[in-house]
Amino acid sequence: MRPLKICVLDMNAGHRNNSIRTLTRLLVRFLEQLRAAHPGLSCTYELVSLREGASIPRDASFYVSSGGPGSPLEVDTAPWGRQFRDLLETLCMSPDDGPRLFGICYSFECIVHSLGLGRVQRTTRSERGVHLMNLTAQSRHPLVTPLSPRFPVFEIRDWAIDGDLRSSYGSLPVATLARHAETGVVEALAIGTVIEAVQFHPEADPGEIRTWLRESEQEQWLTRQYGAHGYGRMIDVAANDDLERTFRMVPDWLRRAYDSWVWRQGQSPRV
Image 1 (cartoon, helix red, strand yellow):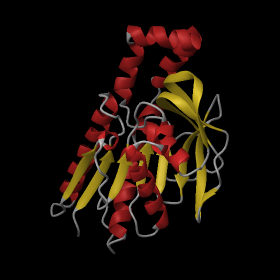
Image 2 (tube, one colour):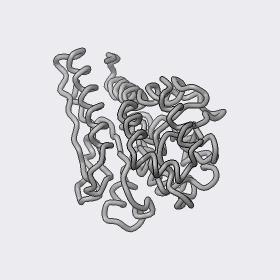
Image 3 (cartoon, helix red, strand yellow):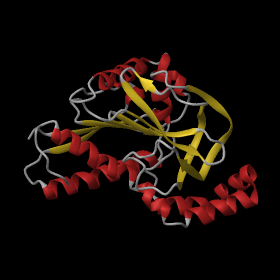
Image 4 (tube, one colour):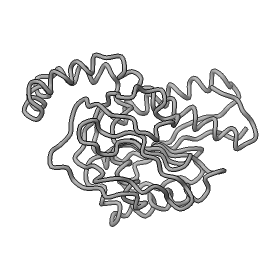
């Protein structure tokens, strides 16, 4: 079997945060499981700082594209934007035998805007903390089937999708998988079997989320933004075990992407 290489597109533009740390921790754990199950398999990951001038490798087995700060509309004019759009279009042109991609938060917004799936706009207020999502009628999809019909997520964002998504991109169906329980904005999508993306942060560690919510600075900010009742509800929702199920989203996607990669080589081992 060929060597496995996972490409992580770091979209943080040089800003340090916990997202890449927790995301790479999940990747390392996944690769350790792979090596234990398949000792002869060469498997690595490459961290690519796309918004700092790095080039996207085209020989990756599959891609994970992170969250990040700033405007997703930058993808239209920034030097890295052409690379990102070309990658998305190339993946969508080879749905049966090409790599898969998973996008998080900023990458979700860039995907929607780059492919013209919907209108991305700045929100009237920043969204932070733990929020509830509703699955949609299109949610019979492996990305979200392990989740409850109403499930909790961790969000930090200033942008959102305004309205609905297109129902297709070229020959590929576009599925809206989840919406924000209060605002109704689109929070998860799938483009055929090629691209899956979410507006929230499934890589955020539940224990770290609970600690973050209790920090004095965050408690004050969240109480000002959502009121004492809203903050208290976040604490209650975060205490629920459903947050652990959301945290399984990235590892589960990695397994499915690996299976797809193996099947494209005419084999069928699992982790």
